[in-house]
Image (cartoon, rainbow, N blue to C red):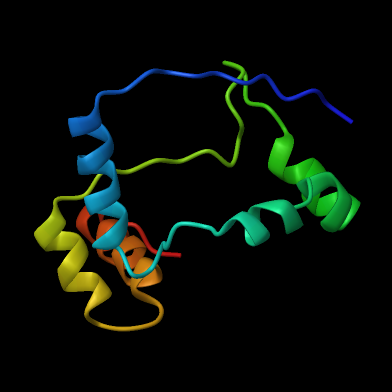
Length: 103
């Protein structure tokens, strides 16, 4: 099993309050309880080996091949979330349409 490096960054009380307010405003991503955190297991223990291997495969620059992060404005995110389950697929479809790509 891989060792996990731990990083700690000290933050101000104001920054902590801002973070907690953001967590409280996101019903799709609630903060985990201590019990939930304790029950978590490494992906390598719970995923089928082929899927795990595909997820950790590295690209040429060393970042995970499955890694993608997109920042959306809050109003855009709210619009798509309001459309219900499958909103992330609809975001992806809208982005594909904007570049003229089909899948």
